[in-house]
Image 1 (cartoon, one colour):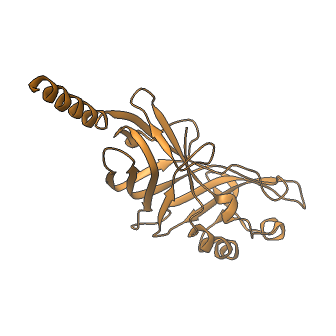
Image 2 (cartoon, rainbow, N blue to C red):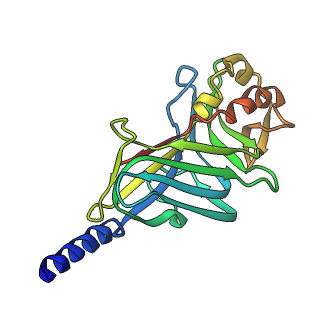
Image 3 (cartoon, rainbow, N blue to C red):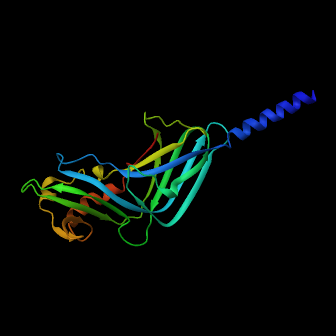
Length: 223
């Protein structure tokens, strides 16, 4: 009887320990790079300044997992190829029915979201760099999915995971017309004549875009 009890306790402890075992989870952040306006408008880079990053996972076994990281601020480069060094985590393995990722822009200073790219003017066929500068105090909360679209995500200690957060400037600029960009003012940025969009230069385009930046159309996809 004593042996059976000991085996039962050992088995129970082993099962509990199983859900404490960590798996490596890394995050990277990028933008939607799909060309718009008939292929004339493309977004290729930029960055965002963040005040915090939160992981909130509902686990089917072993209890839920929550943690929050604050920054002062954290500059994240939009990059599809490299993970964010500060977002390499050891997270308890298990089957997660839902993982919510939250992040908030840093609300001190200017230009906490910058998106860069190019625009080909439809009237003179000249391609200009384009730069969108935005200052916003905005929090985003995104339910993560797998590449197949499921919200059920399995983290396995034997399989490293990478998740990609994608912001969507294509959506932000969806209501901007070809005529608006064709007639946009250009300014010297880094020695190049650039379509600069902020609250003082090309403010008509800025006003068209700014409310859409607040819409939470971001995606988080786990591999």
